[in-house]
Image (cartoon, rainbow, N blue to C red; front, top):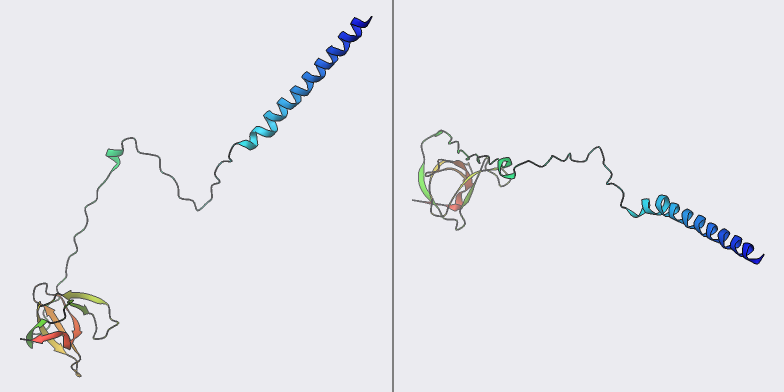
Length: 147
């Protein structure tokens, strides 16, 4: 009589252990594993759209030519009053108007020949034209040496 009771208890123990193992395996599969992988990256309306990679990286490279800057030479307003040289060691920056805060419109290097076209009434600023580039602009009169 003992044998069937022992067999009954070991079968029920095996069944119970199998049931517990199945519950643990399903819990692992559906509860734990989904949280172990990283979530997808969120997308927002203002994100940059990604372009698909080109099939041939060499064929996709397009080199656009760099536009060459053109210097628009102003027509000579009047004849030059006198010729001069730039005596500032670092060169000069030509200004659009006779004041320090005016925008840059050109320049001249040290010892460049310039033609003085006009002077302000107080003779602090002079309108000059660079003889090599034909750019015109205002500079301080102390930066020009009369030839």
